[in-house]
Image 1 (cartoon, one colour):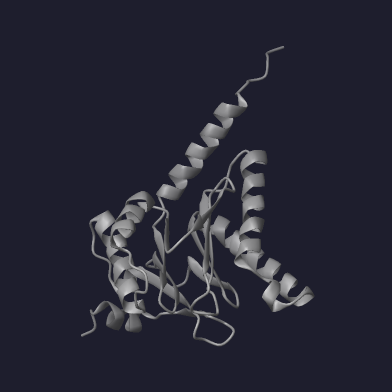
Image 2 (cartoon, helix red, strand yellow; image 1 turned 90 degrees about the vertical axis):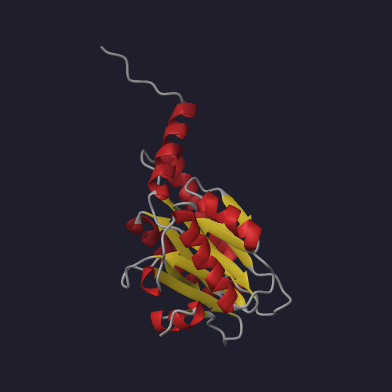
Amino acid sequence: MPLPYYVSPEQMMKDKAEYARKGIARGRSIVTLEYRDGILLVAENPSSLLHKVSEIYDRIAFAGVGKYNEFENLRIAGIRHADIKGYSYSRGDVTAKALANAYSQALGNIFTQDIKPFEVEVLVAEVADDNGAKSEIYHILYDGTIEDEHNYAAMGGQADEIRRFLKDHYQNGMSLEESLQLGVRALSVTQNKTLSERDLEVAVLDRSKERRKFRRIPPEALSQLLGTAK
C-alpha cells in the first residue's frame, strides 16, 4: 500500500499564501484616502455594472480586489450581518470594526481549512460623523490578517508602489478634488498609463450627508473634479 503524499503544514501555508497573492496581484488596484469631509475610494474599474466599491451600511463602505465572485459573496454577507445587527439592536451598533472582525474570521477559516484560499483582499471604511473624530479604515488580507490603516490605503495590483507614492504626497486636510487627483495620479504613475474617468469607479463617504453617507461620483462629475471637462 503506497504511503499518502505528505506536505508539511509550513509548506502548505506558504503555498496557499503565494497562490492567493498572485491572484490578488493580477487584479486592478483600489486607493482609499481620507479627505477633509470624509473618505474617498478610487478603483480602476472600466465596468459600469460590476462594482468593486459599495455601501455596506449608513456610514460604512466596502471595497474588494481579486476574484469578483469571492469578494462579492463577502460583500453580500457583510450587508446581511449589518442589517441583522442594526435591526436586532440599533443602527449605531453596526461598526466597521465589528465587520472587519467578521471578515477576518471568515477569511482566516477559509485560508486554514479549505484547500483553495480566497484570492481577495477587502477593505471596510467608516466615516466619523464629527469632523474632529477619527474615521476608521480596515484592510483585511486573504489569510484574515487585519491592518488598521491611517490616512490612506491601497490594495491589489501595484499596491506597494502606490503606498510609497501616497506616503510621499499625501497631506492632511485635502479637499475632495485634491484627494481625487492624488488618487488617480497614484494609480496612473505606478502603472505608467493614463486613466480617464471612464476607467474609474469612485465613491465617497460624505460626513455632511444625513444618515446614509455613501454616494457614487458619476463620470460627468469626475471630469470636472479631474479638470478634464470640455
